[in-house]
Image 1: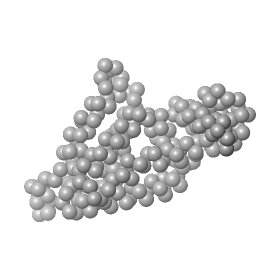
Image 2 (image 1 turned 90 degrees about the vertical axis):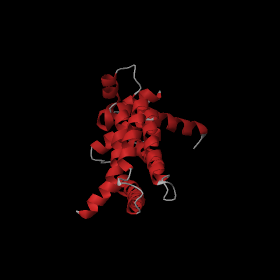
Image 3 (image 1 turned 180 degrees about the vertical axis):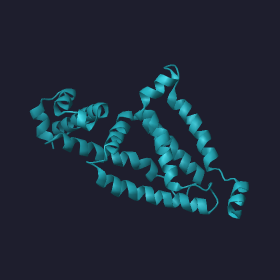
Image 4 (image 1 turned 90 degrees about the horizontal axis):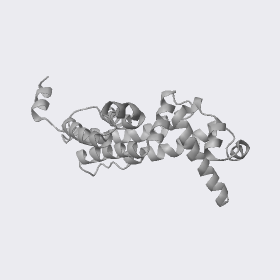
Length: 208
């Protein structure tokens, strides 16, 4: 592609991200995306044959981005540090990329009709791999006994909530408060307590 073609494709994707995150896939139209991009509809269709094609390309690029923090979790690191770093990065992504978070959430809420393969393949494979690392840490007595998959799910829900329900959060807290700064303090406390090994409790569990 020429430089202009590359620029136009990127402009279309940026416009589509804005429209899809605001209206969802079903509510978005090619006319809205074209208007947001500052292009005519025929010009947009020159680059992408359908709304579905734009949506799938956005999701494909987003999945790599979304999984990058989890991908960096390493078995060689300190268990609690690795998990807390992952939590902080997910919260920061919700702060910096709320549209991307809502785009992904909307697709999943609809049953992932255009992206089930990515969820069942790349996402599941990576989550299973990292859950295995966490389980090893638990077996070694380095973390509290909990389900690794549900730990990862809880990080997703407790960080992405601040992007997906931004209006609700800010309405409840008030505009003078910073929900992300407060969330970081709260989640630091929550996950530190959740992950810490309690020798007395473990001894009681072993006796059951």
